[in-house]
Image 1: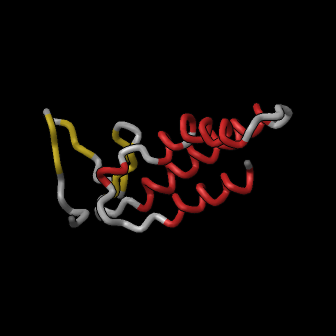
Image 2 (image 1 turned 120 degrees about the vertical axis):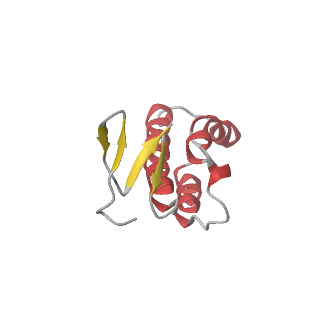
Length: 103
C-alpha cells in the first residue's frame, strides 16, 4: 500500500503502520509472522527463565520439570500457531533446545 493512501473512520484519520499487536499476536503488513514468533520467543524465554529461577534450589525430577515447561512455557510459545501457516520458525526450535540445556 502506498503511503499516500488515506483512511478514515468516523471522521478520524487511521494511521498506516508496518505492524501492530492484536490479541497478543504481532501482525505485519507484509503478512510475515517472523515478528510474531520473535515476540513469542521473547515472552517464552522470560517464562522459562522465571521457572528455572523458582526451581533452581529444588531437587525436582526431570519429568516434573518437563511437565512444568509444558504447562508454563509451551502455551506462550505456541500461541496462535494455527495462524502462522507453513512457516519455518527456527527461533521457536531454539527455545526447545535451550530448555534441554536448562533442565
